Length: 276
Image (cartoon, rainbow, N blue to C red):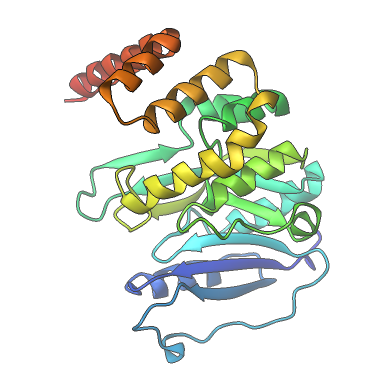
């Protein structure tokens, strides 16, 4: 194995530093040694540099970059080594895997991301199918994804109009530009889904999703297949209409998609009942 590849782990923090030590310690426990850690705080008033000792090294040309949220940690001590091996064996530009979610308020409640249908799609590895899916759903988990440094030179940086979900438009851009993404069917990261960026009802999340639809996805909607395009436009137009009459017109216009979402809603209720 090529041990001189530098792996950069960027730990994202905002206000709550209670899980910072656990996150950093989990990185330091990795068997792969050539790692640098960057703590990136999003303007917390209670931020103090003496809370940790940051590693500050100059990144090498073949740097591999990953991200973790404060309180998140890697699924095993070998995972960085396995990620590096995957980059080398598959000549990958991006390597992505799975995440296991744990709730601090309810330890019995766990989740897995990506969801099963997305895992199946990623394992198949068909770039065109993944691209079409990205118009309506992000297929990738940022804390379980690692990037070659030169990927940023090829496609540019993150869209700074987003507050919390910069990874969605960035991954859309990677897929659109045919960056080689390899899926590893392995838990990479354990994350806590009680945080500020968790939960579909978060106003900040909802605001970001609307900006992504308007500024990132909509300009390329004609590149999408008919079914995915109608699904996107149904949700987008319905969200951006105010009156009952306008919403009814959208429902009639995209009646096939209305039926699809009704089926999904009923199916979700049935699955929830079965889990009880």
